Length: 455
View 1 (tube, rainbow, N blue to C red):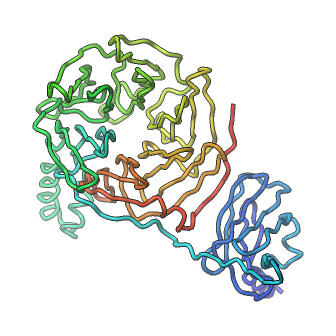
View 2: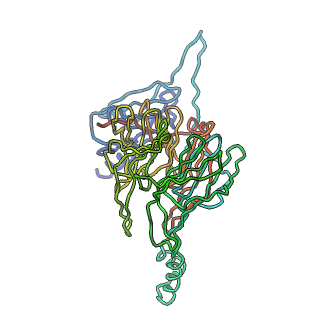
View 3: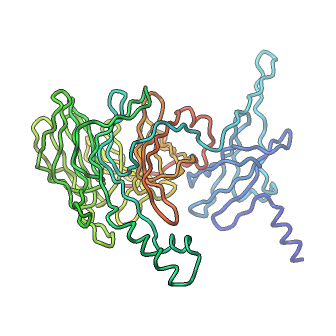
């Protein structure tokens, strides 16, 4: 009897186990498996797609009397209560959608979608770098500063190189790796220009303060570089950078403003009308890496040069974000641990909202936008969030970096630099990539859900 029960469990294509649902979707007419069928839990507001074998797995946040809505191009959408799945042997059958127009039978043809977003490699940066500042202006991407440090696990590297338990063999290699790391911390002071049309990088002859984890904005023919941190010449100490550099293109001169009340690293900042708005960030880091965060918000009036304080953020944190109209969206963040919320701040009514939860925590993703869509990239995943419908989609992409930058120009996304990490080391990247916006129409998302706002 036990063997029969176990066998039955193995052959059931769908089973309910706590909050996890697994199943198969087929065509009712042909009994063929349907890949890329959209499975959506109505109450939980979370969805997924079937794989090439017609299988899907859906993890619900809570066990409720929910219903599944199952749809596919060329088929009639079906809706079934989760409690009724056992009655149909855990197999969901979809009817073909056939339209009769003037006695001519028209069948909607299914479009085959890819499993991963494709991309192109472009001209690389001269030096590998991450946590730099960048902005897009007039068909060019401008990059300033950044961190070019690398870190490694000397002990693990020595183990892989020696493969020996003999201290006389192991220790010299271990100390060699430790010495390699000494003085490695390095920030850049370059002003780089990427011409999108010619796919070429140019290094300006202007040298800036060597800083990283800062901001860059363009306003009235001038670049404003501010915030972040610098390191001492011996790489032993770190300092918050208080100086604002203003690079006037028409004069080809750099002016210095030494007044900056918002000294922090990883502070999201935005140009809004004639102001730069700066939010949060980290204001202190211990030798062991523990950070102290601020929830202060300031704006810098670019016409008067004066600073003003706005209402505080609900959470003291680092973050990255984007301005869309009169609303700021913060994606993920870090308040001592990586965060999974999308937060919005309405600049008109001075109101914060929690727009909902991402699929996972994102500390400081790269972000770009177009119309009502926000594009979010971080470590082999790229997300598409529609601020009107509240639908969030996750896509897979074979670009494995963090702390990069992303810009959108003429229906193409450009991802620059970043930090590549593995078990032995973390190293900056010099890569530049291009992704056509059409890729999101031709690629199957790995996850889909509709976000729920929280007050």
